[in-house]
Image (tube, rainbow, N blue to C red):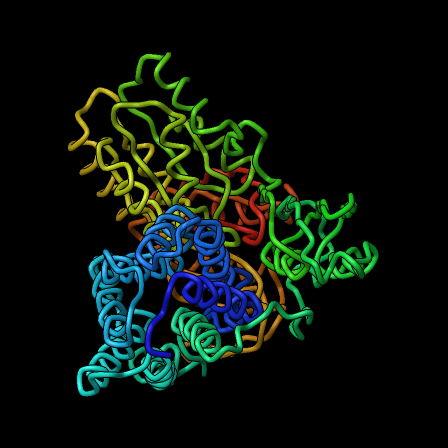
Length: 545
């Protein structure tokens, strides 16, 4: 295979997307922290499928035109750090094939190098031992190989890329000690390897198809009894030729029942409509996609009130609204999951709350649509999660003509403190400085449960333990949730602490929150504010100032 044309390029993209979809639960399982938010595989799969869907519908058969469409789709659909970095890799690849209707082996190798370079530039502080290392080492190795072989084939180039990507991935634990301690490789790097393997298979005439298997790993949702939270996942699938003859509603319905509830599955000729409430929407999408192509899909966090769900209006309608109304001088957009949290932010002048957080990172497009909706001269974005910051920054880059300021809040308490410090009478630069200072003055603690046995910095953790997380460190892991919370409080509060903000989740009763509040006031001379955040996954979120 000496050249890749547009038709073959599309086959590569579809094969890579299918391979990633087939294996994203395994990639999720590589999460270092044993918390129920290991979503690297899910984020990468949703991101890559968004871009590939657009690329496959592109009418052009030119590699450069398809790559442009792919890049834009990935850019807008990017979720989480892994998704944003993946979008940047293929943004660079698109730059590398600019003006080329077909590409040869050397041009492919060169485009992969440009992809790695663009991805590195997109990250302010690149960390080695991650997907960035894997793409750089593999691309550089492949380029050196291609440079020494004038007529190198595309298959040979991709084989070398896969070979070195796997080798680099195996080395990631040596670069990141935390990976070595837990005994895993980098999850983002694993996702990239999976995509590349799909590319290589297509080049050899053996493109990867979507698997019929549901996977051997137990869904997080299947182990929980609560039906009070999760994601309302809806999609419409147009059945492919193979599925039209043997599709059975009950088979898909039974599969969905393993990961969720409130299931509706209806077939209308070649169209299947599905509705399910689940904690793992990616699993639901995987089940649906094996029967055909998505016509429409929607995922909403049921914790948020209806008015906080992203508008379903078209971009044209949004533009009309913004043109018809005068612009506000400023607006604050934040990310949170839970009715109580949303209300806390609204009371602090927040104009829009994007549904999302640990278990479902919003996409770049979610931020873009929210920015358009608030219609303001100056817009402040609060991601409240380290895995959402890049998506927020990417949205700001997409809307480069707007005055958008990303405050890199990594936790809910940081976001709340930033909002408190916002002064509507001050200029944007002053507010940015004050809000950035504010997020450094609060310590954050969180209580959640472990989904697997592991060891973190010498602390033995068993599945089902309640973990107390102080900033980025797991400081306690116990079977007793309340005792774990109390020990976390002790780790957070010191002589300089003045106020504790205790936010309890949807699995906590008011009496339990009062017990923790009394523990704090009995033990420390400190003020306590108690709020019902209603957040899923995290029983308590604690801010200490």
